[in-house]
Length: 301
Image 1 (cartoon, rainbow, N blue to C red):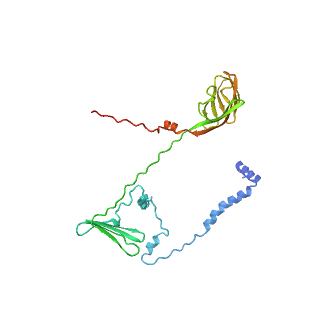
Image 2: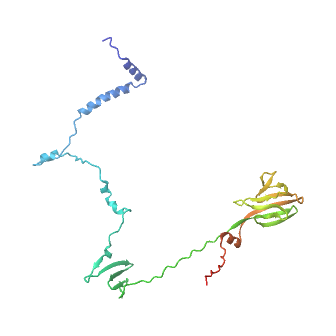
Image 3: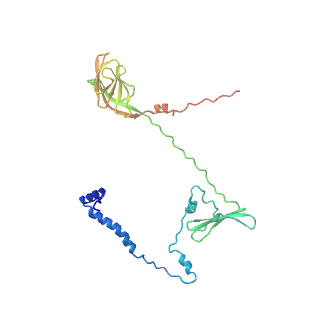
């Protein structure tokens, strides 16, 4: 017995638990694992009192368990959704004939239909039979006037008048430039410069107004080939040395040297605005002009 040696695993486990101060909690946990099942086994079972059954059916009632178990299967979804069939939007609703519109057969063999409609405080009833019709509408005051005729009741209604749709009005607008142009000491105001207008005059076409940008913030001018130098504001296209087009903003000033007469001309862009074109141009563009009268065709003879 003296040669029996503790396994190395247990020595390492004991040393680790002792160094980490977990030896006492480990011992308490082992004691609890052993003591709790024993304590629970020694406790007497709880007594359940069941009512004693007397009589001839005592043996049958004793065999019935206290809790009745019910086996639940898969519920039928059709039974649960049957009450919602009347609200199905894909099925036609109200197909049955209302009781107020039921057809009744009279002893004489003719059929009559009666319908009653409640309006306000009175009731309006209409009955139709062969050869006669009666309409009665008793008001709330107690009087009951009746209207009867020997022919079926007819209601006259005027045909609805066709509404005339107003023809849309077409309005056309064009860009106009307001400039000051001329010799440096003789600038002239041109408030309504149209597209393709030559400035300062047709005899001296230094620049030509080509139009404006979509937003109206810039104006485009075509520079004449007789202009050999351009100075001042604006942007030359394609470049300053070869200025074929001049893009200007309101407030820009440009100076041009016109080679044919050797003079300089100034151009000041005041603003760019849109104006409505005249009625003749609108009719020519939209085709609203009055058609010409056609001569009638003459037949033979």
